[in-house]
Length: 283
Ligand code: IPD
Ligand code: CA
Ligand code: CA
Image 1 (cartoon, rainbow, N blue to C red):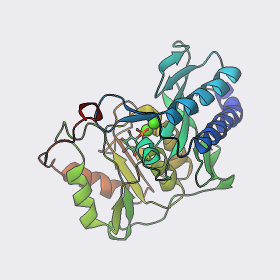
Image 2: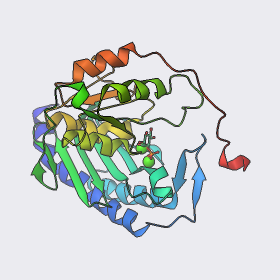
Image 3: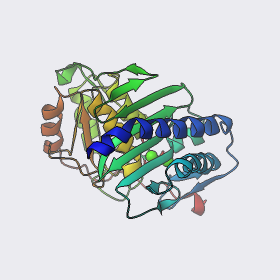
């Protein structure tokens, strides 16, 4: 990131915020609107009218302000200027399964990568009306108040969070063994169904750590900025530098990072169990 990028961060953060709040209002308006629900490919990977309407709202804001930037949006794919150093990674509704079951835990997640590095993040939970924001060097906030990661330094006193990707029935690398392993070692492991809020909650100290595999850049770009700016650590499972395209992430409060990383590296996958859930298309 160069000096001119750094000067632009407050403006980029304001634009990300405008997009997140605008799309959040769309999600509020669509609450309970379950007429259109489709599977995108894998069993359980849903898309609703709300995902599409929210994404349209985000794109309208970004394209109005920054028409020369690149965009990776979950429902529209790669659009925008592929030559740009600025890539916006957008999840218009992170927590679609929750939304489709009227479980009010989901968010709009808007991240900006500069030269591939997460630099700006805005995550808005329209059901709790909580806005998480952050940018490199500018700190992280929840509802405009500074936030910090927790200070927990013992695994047995920690609360962790994780998730399971839509390919979980097709691979033994499905995170089931890791979930059991950490459930034994900690005060608990939660599965909320919204990766971006999992990261925002690590940033504000509600969780002490988060790991997951099978993710896309739009799930994590914004949250990575929040955790780092709140004083936490974000890497690959083995502690090496994170590649946002690898699908795997370990984000913690810092004191627990090495311990969780070591335990993650020790777990061997469980064999797949039980029958697969049939796709909605097959009845
Ligand atoms: C999903 C959620 C979930 C995570 C999945 C994601 P979506 O995103 O973030 O917590 O476990 O891997 O795909 O489909 O609700 O946008
Ligand atoms: Ca997502
Ligand atoms: Ca989504």
